[in-house]
Image (cartoon, rainbow, N blue to C red; front, side, top):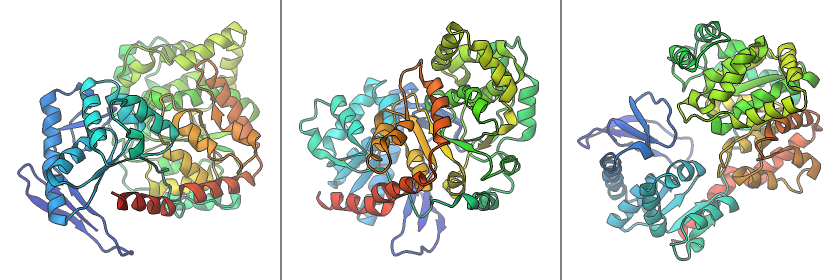
Amino acid sequence: SEAYAYDADGNRRPLLKRETPYPGKCVMHKPWIGETLPVYVWDRYEEFDDVRPMIELDDATIENYLQRNVTIVERVVREYGIKALHANHAVLMSVVAERVSRKTGIPFAIMPHGSAIEYAVKKDKRFFNYALQAFDAAAIIFVIGQEIRQRVIDLFPQIQHVHRKMVTLNLGVDTSLFRLLPPEEKPVSVGKLMQVLPVNSQGKSEAQAQNLFNGLKDDLTLDEMLRLIEENHEYDGKQPDQNAAEKLQTIRWGKEPVVLFVGRIIASKGLHLILAALPLVLKNHPNLRMVVVGHGPLREPLEAFVRALESGNLHLVRNIVRWGLRLEGGPAKPFEEIALFFNRLERDGQLNNYFHRAQQYLRSERIVFTGYLRHKELRYLFPACDVAVFPSIVAEAGPLVFLEALACGCFPIGTYFAGMAASIDSLQGAIPDPVREIMKLSVEKDKVVSEIADKIGRALEVDDDIRGALRRVAVEKYDWQNISKKYLRAFSSV
């Protein structure tokens, strides 16, 4: 395989060249796109100082970004004799593919996902128009289920016969990488994870975590909290914590039940809902451990939330819930689901009991934040965990982590809507319906926290032979080998 980078003048330089253990190869071309990186949701990127949600960009910046990509992609198409293009997401690569197709005459396909639709196409007329033109010109629209199919139809009623372009193509998982292991091999798997963790990680340090905790106080204002977060967020979020291995070694793998979350640590992924549910779970499972994998602007606020619950700092707990999305740079909107959960507990006279349980059972060191892990590390972590929870608040077309959990026999629980619902429904007939019901989380905001607590507890009691059934579904319906064959058949028809 080969990789090349281009400078602003279009000059190409090689980045790597290596032999492959299979007949094919991958050739990567990395255009120079300027100083600004357009994204759907803000995050830190090592190569870019100017990272902005694309809906905040002016027209000229967007067009410059598109043209730089079009120039290189067209060049690659002509030099390599490319016969077809595949663009991920509704924007902006679909626009690049459409423009290159117009210049070269080769067909292109689009595979839309939820993030571009929700964070760009629906929010900004410019991106809707970009997507409309690209979808209208596409030869194929790959959709990963009925939900995303219907979303495309509803978005673009102007496109005649849009449904005829659609080909259903499941997300795939590498089932040779993500595997089911016997329970007694969990410690061995985690040992392999330790071996592949980077030695000199530039991720979050223990000192930064302690500095954050030391700065927490009952009367902390929002401005003080934001300052405290900023002071302790200067690390590479795309790497594991510096002491990730040490923290993971505190878990008695195979002897303590382990709940896993993998994803961006932002409100729309719902990690805060799991953390709010833990005091209820811990009453019946006091030795429960939780592993949080990922990075994002809510990491420090949620670590503070756990520490405040543990220490009985209830004023700070309430404030963190009230500040909500402000803590990740968003609008003045609370963590609504937790606020409703607290209100219901208060009406029922149970709120003080909840806070008492949190102080009695919740220990921040029993919740391991690992930082960012890649597939080469996750392949060893998933099969070592018992339950994985993905309580997304925003509809996702296809949650890949759900499939990775299936492949490893790690019992997945997720919000029952959009692509997550389709993944859960695909298990019908493979496992008993009452067990499948445990996987479903309500979309009702006033119920979801209590439901997470209930479903985690029930998932931990599921018979061990269910793990094998989950694995079989992953292999039969979501294995990369089978999906790639369908993908090639679709392209051969255009």
